[in-house]
Image 1 (tube, rainbow, N blue to C red):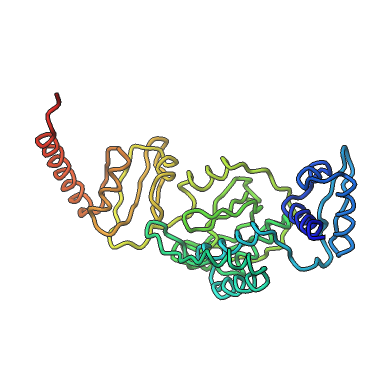
Image 2 (tube, rainbow, N blue to C red; image 1 turned 120 degrees about the vertical axis):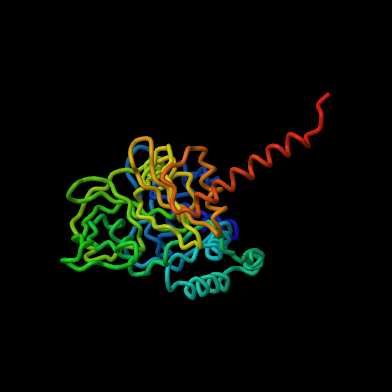
Length: 340
């Protein structure tokens, strides 16, 4: 009986993990015959799980939607994975810290003793990485509106806040009318949430910072989403200088023109930097740091000539850095051991 119960829980876990399974594939995963698989599916249905048969070559099964499912069932690996994820999730959504703590407590309360002990072995403390500049925490309602629009395939209408967090009124210089987009994907990168969407009017792809989105009507017209690959998402976020980022709040901030394409610089610039396209081979990079020497060192990592350096303090730091590097080079030559 114990083996049967464990197998049925495993079957449920597999059905939850994928939209659709071939019957033969499920039977192989479980190490049972097709007849035993059909009997286990029948058992799940009697317990209230809407397992649907899929017609077609070979036949298959899927976990149906709608109706009220029985309590969530997790296998060992899933339970530990959730416990770790809850403790390591970045605090980028406002107002959920207490909910995260309660969710972890609830999860552990319903775990078997051995599994609870295993999860409690992962008592983690997340420390801030000062080179990962998270945006201001996102309001839960905003995230829910964006996520719902993606899930239900409805266009999303929203105001897009300025970099300082304001929504200009009509008549103000920076005013722009509400945007209407076809939301496709949410991406989290370097502590910031981005929405990948296609403009309803221009049909062009855009990348929007979710913390700057103020939804107006999350239930717009239906649309048919287009497939996006991992390469597409990398291009639209990591390699995209126009992703709506703003310079992080450092004591020292400087900018310079670099002889490299904006997409290349955007991919390798530290979090919290801003890259502005000039032409196909040049861009302007703005970087912050704890000191002017730190900012100068970051510019040097791009191995490119620098122009239009601002402010003067950054130029002074770059000259001082050049002197130090020449001095270090001469010391290395003088102190290097002789080769035989």
